[in-house]
Image (tube, rainbow over all chains, first blue to last red; front, side):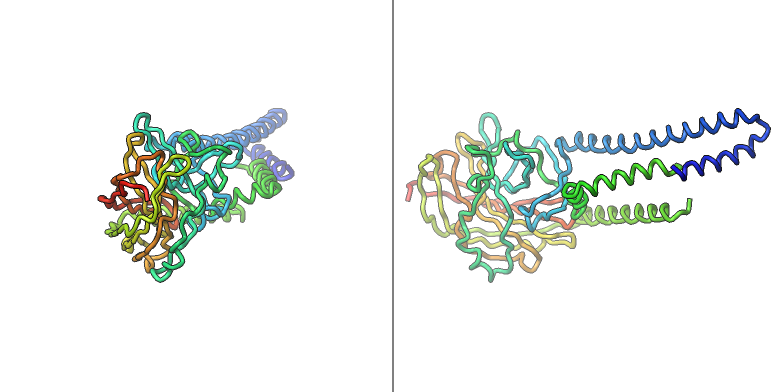
Length: 219
Length: 167
C-alpha cells in the first residue's frame, strides 16, 4: 500500500504540471477518481485471470468430453509408464474401450479416481455395452531375450478385481465408471499440484503472494 | 518497466514457452517415423481347459511369442508396452478381448525378443463358449513417449482354435 501511495503522489505531481491552471478542488477530485480507477482496473485484471483459467478448463472439458480433462498421477501404481507428478491428458470419445488402453475410473467408496490399464473387454452383442477388467502396475520390464527365465512362469498375476480394488461384489468396470482414457502425457508438471495438496501452507503463501502482486503492481 | 521482477518474469515466460514448443515438436516428430514391426506366435500346448465353479470356461496354454519391434523406437520413445490378447466373438458378446501376456520394452536393444511362456493373466470367458472356439491372437503395442501423444497399433494373427473337449 505504501508503494501505491507513492505512485499516486507521483501522478499528482505530473497532473499538476499538465493541468496547472485548473483549481485545487478539481485536482483532488481527479486524484480520487484515479485511485478508484486503479483499484477498479486491478479488480478487472484479477477477474480476467480467473475467468480465462475457467474458460480454458471448460473449453478443454468440451473438447475432450471428459469431466476432468487433465489429471495428475498421484501414486506409483503405473510405474514405469507414469511416475508420481506426471500429467495425463484424458479424452472421452464415443469409441468403445479396448484392451490395453489406460483408463481413469471411479470406484464407489473411493475418493480418488484410479489410472489403470485394461486387460479384458467383453462387448455385448445387443446393447454394445462393455464390461472391462483392469490391472495395476505395468511391472515387469523386459530386458533382452536372456531374461526369459524370469518371465517364464510369471503367470496368473492379479487383476484389480482379485486385488480387491473394486467395490465389494463389483466384477467389472463399466462405461459410467470411466472418466476418460489417457491420450497424452507430460512429465513432472504435476508436482506443483502434489506439493500444494500435501502442504496447503505453500498454496496459501502462493495465492497470497499472487494477490499481493496484483494489488501492488501498477499495470 | 525494467525492474528485476519484470525481467525475471519475461525470462521465465520465454523459457516455459520454449520448453513447451520443444515438447510439442518432439511429439510431432514421432509422426515422421513409419515403423515396420513383425511378430509370430505359436501355441505349443493347451495345459488345461475346464469350466470353473462360476460357470466360466478357463484355459491355460503355453505359447511361443517372437517379435521385432525395433522400428517403433524414436528419440522421443520412453518405452513400448507390448501385450498379446486373444480376441473372439461369442453369441452374447460381439467382441471379447482377453490379455494373456504383457511386457515393457525399455529400449531399442531389447525390442527384438523371443519368449516361451504360459498365459500370465487368466484366459477366462464370460460364460461357457470356448469349446472348439476359433480365436485371433493379436499383438498390441502402446508407444509411451517421453512427452506428448501416445501411439498404439497391432498385428492380428488368426487361425487359432481351442479343443472341443475339456481337458
